[in-house]
Image 1 (spheres, helix red, strand yellow):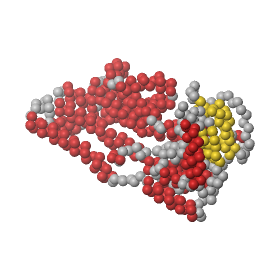
Image 2 (cartoon, rainbow over the protein chains, first blue to last red):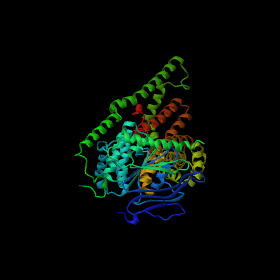
Image 3 (cartoon, chains in turn cyan, green):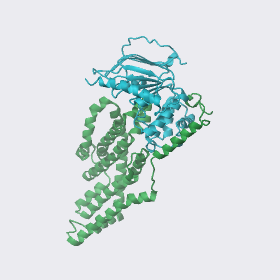
Image 4 (tube, rainbow over the protein chains, first blue to last red):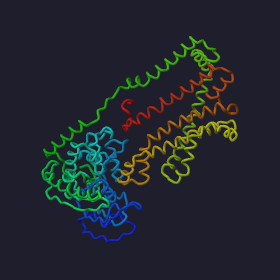
Length: 268
Length: 307
């Protein structure tokens, strides 16, 4: 599927473990990963994780548990202190909580810039950007500037921009946290559809239990200080879930119970 | 399909056939139109009237108050001339063509000095913003220079360059360059870190990051640095022209001001001050304000009342 030359490995100065991955299956492999800032406390401790290609993984945890740090390490924005992260398809696309569109460019040009940095020839960019915007139902807003768009529309432009990077892995750091409930609900549906349509591997960081239960095929719960993966759930039937579905509520309750347990341990 | 096959995001069949998806699209479009920020554009005429009328009314009121004071208090005309005396001085300077010459000379020097200052200040600012050791070393010096009144350089410049245009340009540069460089530095500093991260994530090289992300993002700060740079250039120019007269230095507004003082012609002095003020306002209104308004409006950085 991918040539070995495109494989990028983010390693700590001293790599201790040999990569032992089932080839072709794992999109992201994380081995005994640890992270600390300077001489501070351990932020992430001994994270071992293998994420299948095409999987929708939600990374769930309380504020400050290091889930964003983990995402940044996968994205290559930060370096791990120990261990290694392998993204089989090379680099990953990233979407943040803040849409972070370039305010001096229109929605269409924002997407075009991503295409340009990817090396798409100038002639094809405008049409490609328009198709990507249409994928998130925003073809009509291509000429609008970011400040003229609502928060939800900006996030959709940001989604179109990350899709423009054409990378097999999409990392999302609480992308819908700042949106109102109605918009967020719609964007869940949008993202799910885009995921099915494009076959991306998605790692979605959130502190919203219901959101994780609504979106994830696989949910990873992280503890805080140091961040470890303490439990995980796999959802087999992801067909017709809605935020108000009873199975989402049931799973949410179960996860919330564990999450609270984890948080309580920090009280002492 | 007209597209490069590499764009596999759109390779999946489009959504026209699915009624559920059509419904979703209509739902989303409805929410978008509910949340869209309504624009209330005002006509160009209305905008001009709103922008120009209040300051003109103020001007008229000030002149009227001045004239009323002259009529009631009857001060000595050589100490406090009336508006008509000042206007007369202006008219006689115009008819002897001294006024035109002075304005043109000063504007030419100010403009050229400003452009040189931009050419010098911009690379210095970029170097300062992007290179930490340079910033730590030169930064405090540059901030200090910004505070130092550039008139202080006039005596030194006269000794170095004599009574030539070089003296005038030197003083302008010492006034304007620090402002322009510092403006660019603060423009770069104010770039939201998220934008750089996005640049990194999108795979921008160092050069692409500088040209496609950092410079456009820093433009508003840089522009206000340019505005301040112009103000400093114009002030420094006037100071230099007032102090340095004679030699090969031509006849500028500062020279005209100083001549009127030597003749104890207060009406002439006030008239020249008004011209200097007026040129400053004109450059701001005609040159800087439209560019700035465009720049800020395109980024949604303009308060609603100022649109």
